[in-house]
Length: 238
Image (cartoon, rainbow, N blue to C red; front, side, top):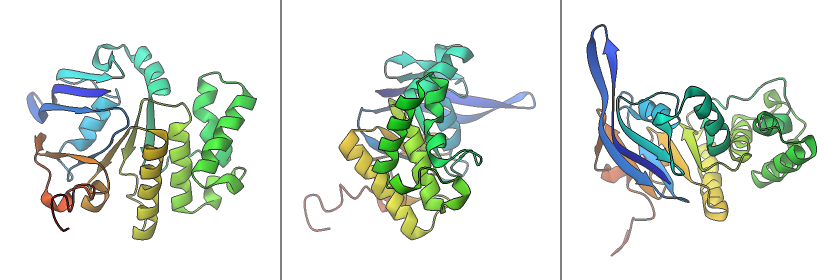
């Protein structure tokens, strides 16, 4: 569903190229929940921007749902992102003067979906993320965890092929972090949503089904400390 093949990327530092990613090669299957784990400077933000079609790679290819996105024009990419990709951001990126419901509906406005259908879809998702009683409130009236739940609902409203979550628990306390990851796991398991969670936190990564770890722009074997919980204890006692 998501295939990254021999992906490399460099930035120009003056006249000299600086390589940020080198030979990245992996797949994410439909319905997987994968962590892209890396510390600051590992290249994970660049990789996310490339996979989301926000930048063009120096070399290699990226396919999402059968579409080779690095070959698309900017206009085609903008349409593709609206229909095939969902985003969850660390800082929520909610529009303050819109209600919770209106924030979730917004991607459907850009698709030309009629108001009644938008309202029904937003209501369904807000109920699923536990915010059915807060649809007409504004973001400033919600806690950080509740705002992130709105962001999650918004990411799903267009029924995207993949959702990229960029440090989705970075602004949350430990308890709320666990609740948000629990919610993402539930959505993955019940709706079959494909999630790629970009994080520097081992505790977040190990809650997913598989870890793709970056270090200095290259893929490495995942740190045993971040081993997914689903693998712990296999073949013996935990």
